[in-house]
Length: 64
Image (cartoon, rainbow, N blue to C red; front, side, top):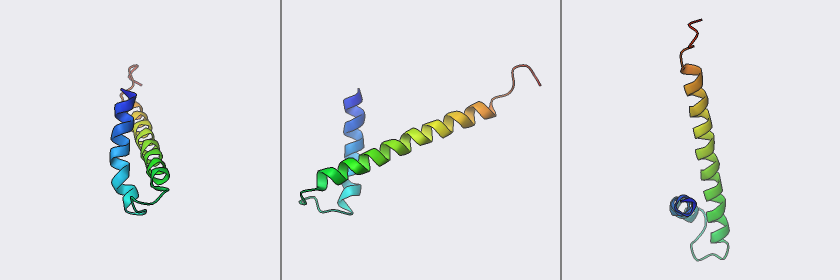
């Protein structure tokens, strides 16, 4: 399951990294991993913000 998530992130990261570095460059893999890490951090931040917004929008069960 984790391998699928990593594969999807690298699938998204490759074209983004190719905008900045040629795919033939020796350091393309490094830039691809950097972009994948940035994407992962963005996904985690979005999930955290969404979770916090859901908790704050939930009605108070005590009715206060």
